[in-house]
Length: 319
Image 1 (cartoon, one colour):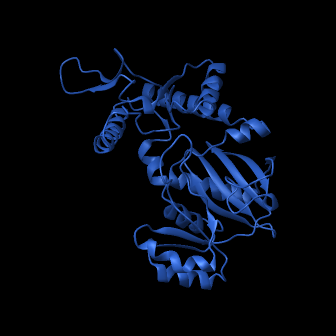
Image 2 (tube, one colour):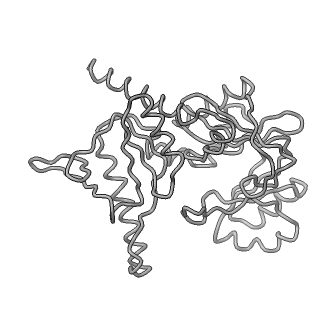
């Protein structure tokens, strides 16, 4: 099994590797930020003896691939900013292309699938189509439209970005925050950077759902102990939670439409008991749920990888 991660991620990748080992499977870990400076990965095509994807001096083969992190290259500090940016872009493009040279094996989840599934507007559209509740949402670069939305939602609006400000092992996100009336006069910058505005959803609970191959492993936080964004402001401990069957069924349909076998789904349970879908991160964090609640997420991923590998091999033998 090939596990794609980065050098600063010690927990989830090691947990999945350990779960595979307990099932008798060997895992090869590639820290993607080591390419190209410390990871001897190359592609050979179109000449006698070409071996496809090569790691070191051997062809790289795998029965299945787990994509956890595809990370920017760690480059020589002596590079100028201009050369660093060019080298990082080229390294990332080369790595994506090289990984496409792997023999046709199952992925959790394929590069292009995860990239397409990370589209937040698409997620919300599909969720709504499938009967999941979503917050009233405006995605815009128009300050006037944002002000109108604020008034229409009685001033109960949060603002957030769709992507991190930067990719960093220390985190590069910007917290979701409640929009204040005083902020309305400072929205001219939207012309340069669109944002997502949503109706603030009152919460009895915040849910983080680790989705693995059809299974929902759920942690809940007391909404009263969380700020607007629990990732940055929360004094609650994780508690186990079971999804109602209709919610699980709709989430399963959503993940199928997105093509995802794994993902971290965020939902809010309102004081009236309504489940409101916010988003799914195709490679969102789940280790806190495994550590604090004992949820077998890494084991579920190992089982899914082995099942897919066995199915792929069986289909290949029947051709």
